[in-house]
Image 1: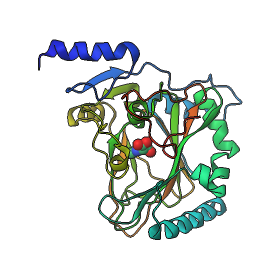
Image 2: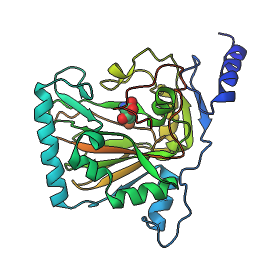
Image 3: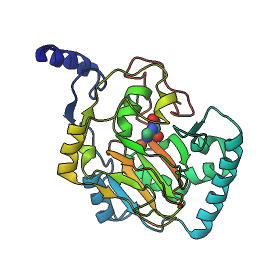
Image 4: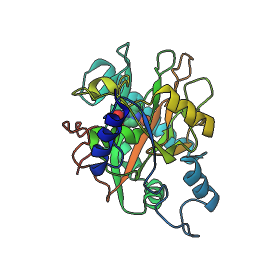
Length: 302
Ligand code: 6CS
Ligand code: FE
């Protein structure tokens, strides 16, 4: 293809969209146009200055022993209860592993389940969310990921924002995920890997999103994943950090931080709760792909 045509294609798109993706047939690396931290740090902030600076520079932060053993025990038994129910029963918001009938994720738990609703509203988490995003916040997406022993499958490298922007119409990078470890995260049971600093670049991916892509992508993602050269470049600049920590630790990561995790063939499960907080000033618009928005159990729209 003529390279001039390619850049015209992208330029036309970027007039309306500062992070165009899945519109060209070559990957493009762009600069982040939005802040990472939306508040000024003060003595009253819910993170220390060091933690706050670390998050701004690296795009993630691990807080060890954030929750107590009792809290974790309660959530773990709730997770087991849900897992037992949905192993036998199909439901739209329950996603199975790509090659088996094992439960991979259960979505919208902040909405469907009293116990996890309370967790999503936990004052310490909401305090951090409002601080990082500099406004009131709400839960854009929530789920539990099971990553069971022996059969838990990987999550390929991706930026959540790329998907939330293209498929859900999230306008700006003003959201982050909080992953709460319900089990110990070792090197061997498929812990979260992040590329420090990757949140400051946007990788515009190639390909066009198929209709109803989410049905496939939540089991195994194939569109909206970065190309190998871009990943290698990010990795060269930032390295790869493996987020280890005992049950009760939390990982906060920016919506554009490149992350993924390996499969789990060990006997040790690695279940966790994922809560995505978004700014009330960053509510989803029409999806930038021009396609229909994904269901509300994946992306809250009001
Ligand atoms: O598509 C989504 O929104 C979800 N998929 C992945 C692989 N990560 C972020 C998000 O939960
Ligand atoms: Fe993700």
